[in-house]
Length: 162
Image (cartoon, rainbow, N blue to C red; front, side):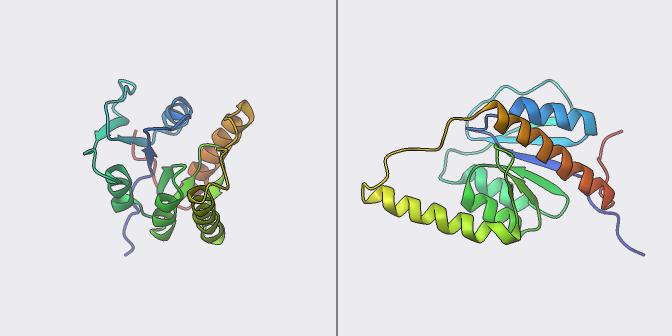
């Protein structure tokens, strides 16, 4: 007899996440639990499917909380490449706020690029940051999150809510 898979859950690295409202909409439509993880107070909807988690202000406390719970059937929303790497390694579906999925095939290159850019910034060679967040990014994110949840449901993961 095979074990019933754990319910689909969404874990949000929330401190600088620009797509929280979109996450709440998709989660409500699919009846999926959302964990909003931050090291400071954030307002979340008054909904039993949305739970705020405030972690200590320690370095990477939110990342550690999320990574400890990452698993197959979980969807992690983060722009943090090291956290994405940890969660992909644990089997979670990981999506950046621009809708870019992080996968086993792409995470190594993303981590290498991040480390290279960090080194270049430390040497003073790079002064610009990421391009501004756009409506196109928001739309791509909505599609990617919906697709990830649909794929997990088809794979037999329950939504977890009636």
